[in-house]
Length: 186
Figure 1: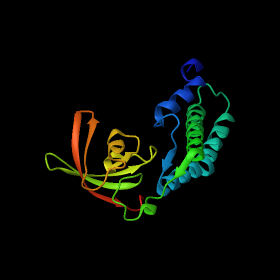
Figure 2: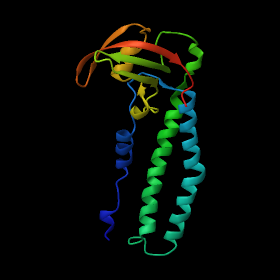
Figure 3: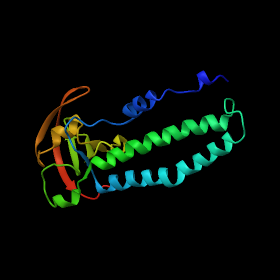
Figure 4: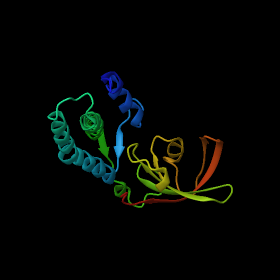
């Protein structure tokens, strides 16, 4: 196979990194829970100490086999190495600017801040529970929403019993805050 079809330009790495990473608004801090910080740190350690050295071994072995232009192990290994290096750069940058906020320090506060687990009810009587977390911890399936999301921004500084209006993708919604709890975010 011709190298022109497998070679990727160096500028593509930054573009891919920017697309994959949830962005932070300019001038804001990268708030993160202790659990989220530990997960990012663990992933970085896994990549640096285990996965990258393993791929480097494979690439070195594949390179020693000769013709690299048609060597699948070499081509895939180099591509995987670029992906790993991109993720390592991303995690390193995120951890450098991370500001750890422990939700347990809020105590019995019924006002909503970062790290709060909030139960809300809508007009139809449906209840949902959300935990306000950092942009790198967002997981909608588990009810974890980023502190910069429209819903979280509407909820922040509100209290139990308040009614909040916010702009959702389907239009303006109104929800009632039923419960605010601060607990460990695993």
